[in-house]
Length: 387
Ligand SMILES: Cc1cc2nc3c(=O)[nH]c(=O)nc-3n(C[C@H](O)[C@H](O)[C@H](O)COP(=O)(O)O)c2cc1C
Image (cartoon, rainbow, N blue to C red; front, top):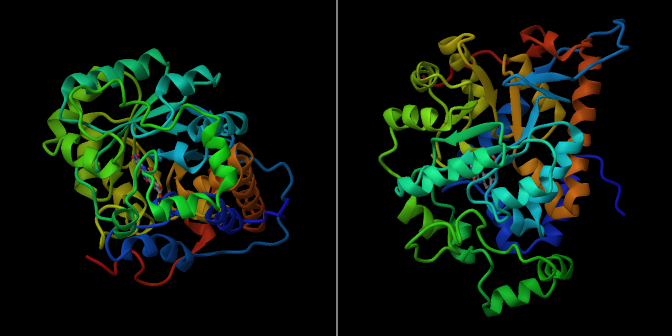
């Protein structure tokens, strides 16, 4: 068993163990990948203020996100095709999150279905919705999430059309993988993954196959998105979906102060400042750089969460110190899953928790709620460079 000390260790193992097509799917951004790179580079620009000779006993990272208790304010982000990174991936990640005490968000484009995950977990999870043209199908997805006792609906607003990722096109990304000479050659070296897949029936988009009517090729994420996602989604439809759901609503993909105000007006419980991990509008700013203007725009009318670029507990600390109430990790937990299944997701959470806790101590803080701008050193003009 290799010694894992950081998220990068899990990433290396993920790369070695998962088929190239799925590792590449996770480890890429759209077009030139500028925003994908900026997400991590901008976190690195912000530095932490060290404090010494401060009592650092009895620290706590416990908090709440949309009123739910969390061991630390770090949720697992919705990630499509998680069950292709490792057999039964969504179930394993949900179990790891449940045991750790953080929320798990199931993607519409998951391999394990809503019912699969609900049957194998005890605590409620969150369900992420992509709005499709087929209103009946959307209504049924919402009903299924309600029946599964999901405790929040995460409505993603930034992917009604798909940003192009070159590698996915070149690799012929699909679930399950289509057998071609190059995929066969690649799969032959991933025996661990192959054995897992042989042992599970969950190899298709579980929320879609058998549920959506009149659909063509359900194995291809890109053709499904192009054919089925609703390009007419607007704030009026968001308000209707909020009513239809009737529970806690989180709006994901906000990167602009005006949009944040609209999200607050519509009555969302939280927004996620997110550029989809650099996978949609290439050239958009990093989430961490726009966070302060969004907080200024909404005040405390809505909880503000953030994702995109978090690879460490120090990154979480920076987002919280800038005013985010909660954060999400996408790739950081996917690396863990692809590396070692459920144990790998647990490891990713442990790594991030330890980094967060120890960095808090070194910043002279004992309670996560006391983090603030005073803990940060921010380069001049960092937030005003682009206008
Ligand atoms: C492989 C992959 C698949 C994703 N699939 C979805 C999805 O199905 N729904 C969604 O709302 N966001 C999806 N996202 C975006 C994540 O929810 C999250 O916004 C992003 O991963 C955060 O950036 P990070 O990976 O740098 O942490 C996906 C991200 C990745 C990396």
